[in-house]
Amino acid sequence: MKFKGIIFDLDGTLVNSLEDISDAMNVVLTSLNHPTHTYDTYQYFIGSGLRNLVSKALPASNNSDEQIEICFDCMINEYREICTLKTKPYEGIVELLNNLISKDIKLAVFSNKADELTKKIATEIFPDYFENAVGLSTEALKKPNPFEALQISKSWNLKPEEILFVGDSDIDMQTAKNANMLAVGVTWGYRTEQELIESGAKLVINNPLELIEIL
Image (cartoon, rainbow, N blue to C red):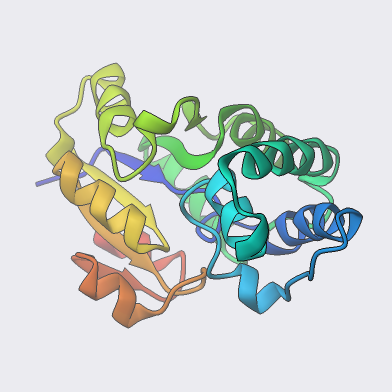
């Protein structure tokens, strides 16, 4: 079957946003006199939304729902100001997107990052590439819930089987499976090839331009 559309995850797939996310959360932790974390540790906190990341970053002794909510709001306020400061596309991504556009492939972003921030990063770093950029608006619709991916499919008037779902995490591979889209894992993000395969990746690529070969 010819693939006509691609839905990309954002963090760890299109952009390396690890340092901006980590820096914002560490500012919040420092302000509360809590221990901070390294970038390597944050690598495993990313993927299930920023509220979940806040919960993982907080000490177990200060992890009530109320505390998480307060810290989440503070983290978002910090992150909003710096979310494109250090965040950059991975090598080869812009070249890939230009190639896909030239082939009239429909492109979208679906992230567990807050919708406001997903749209901000996608439009500032990748202007004019994506027909849709969808982030988290309500916890119930968070990946691996396929609802938003299927909405994108409908807006394109494409069958889910005609769409690649590209991401770097187990959550992305599960989302692809739930949406009946082809799950393509990428190894330059925050998870290992083994994790991607175990989570349902049908294909794994090590370089963005390998995606063109799949098409």
